[in-house]
Amino acid sequence: MEDKGVSQRPCFGELSEEQKEKLRQFKIKTRLDNERYLRAHPELGGMIGAFISKLILNKPTNIREFAADHFTTLDAHAAPSAERSDSAE
Image: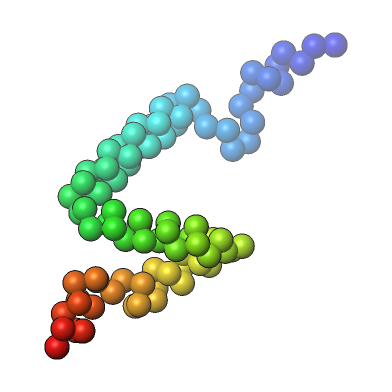
């Protein structure tokens, strides 16, 4: 007994070839847009680097919670130059 017809019919929720191509193009455009944004905002490299360092040092079990806390806590964003100017006064 062969199931040829079953494998040829799209499953519920399966994307058509046209939808797959649109999704692929969307992913490419999104990656390019993200890269342009990151290049235009080099300060993000420092923020991400600081987060990765803190992540490696703390080794949290819940990374999403840790990231949310890190990026919503004001102390996490204190600029080194601002700290130096405060301590110089």
